[in-house]
Length: 430
Image 1 (cartoon, rainbow, N blue to C red):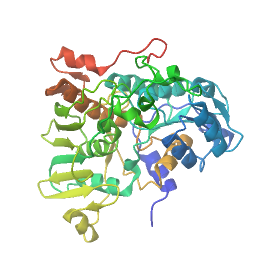
Image 2: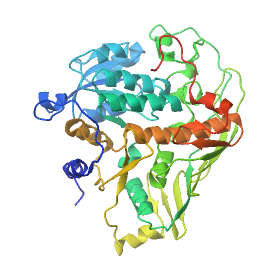
Image 3: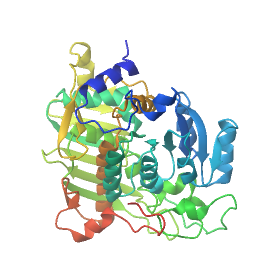
Image 4: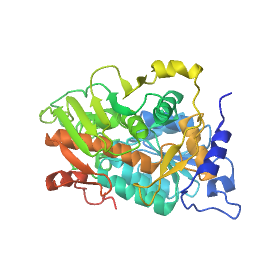
């Protein structure tokens, strides 16, 4: 029988070693759970994935507020989710509402960190779409705020909740392929495009607010909505878009941080066009010699190679001789790792997290129990950092050495300037 969310909660509650300090009522409940069993949901960024995750969240709570900088998008979203949700252009109005207990965020990547921080400081729990951050330094600030406020933050790297990826990681951790030697994460290339013309700003779009911390530029239709991913100002291309999934799984299995990075890329150089790499690859080495290779061609998924076998996993399959042997040699309980939220270099072991029904359900279970979700902020900061490191090496065009304890490049002042980016006045992250 498939374990239930209740089984997961029992396991997590018993095993957690370094829990957050949460605000609770006299009965030890979160404010949302103390009021009723259906917390109020505020959703920010309602185009594409925003509508998808909001629909999933309706199984667990009630949508009371919607925010989007595009009036057409927010009005369409309100029509989709009933006439009752309040709508606003500025997400801060949503955070001011007392009936909002949890916030779902599905904005472009350059807004993720600031919105999570603002929501946590407003006393809300947060489900944030991946990738967690735009820069490495953003992740440092975000993790500090999550720790200080004690909020539950789940990142939408949902492959951690998928049974295939979970099984692959557990098998690697159990030594079913022997000592891990190499992990290969494969996606496909970033698209090329441009030059694109500047156009008048649509009257239904607040373009200034959409740009947020990024440099103010004339409105170009292709910078906005889904295709923001192919502009380095707002995202990291597929290195962070897919990396937040596949590299996250690799990072989870390796259970360490890279120390050497060698990224290679072809950058387009098209004025007023997409500016993420058109072709990309990276090799990262970990302290015990494990190599992570990230490629943009081949079979999409994650390949684990060890001294005694291989396992391939993607969203449709998990395969390899060690998988075939599970029928006769089932796995014992694994010891997964959570990291001390005051010192990411000091892992604390917890018991096996039983199979999760779904990623959104795991988030709402943790909102009620004040447990740690499967894709929490510290783990996702580490995975996003690995992706950012690859992008920085690619853009600098040379290998780099990384100190994961100090979160700095070793002996490379120029590379360290890439840990952050200039932020437009009024949108700073602190």
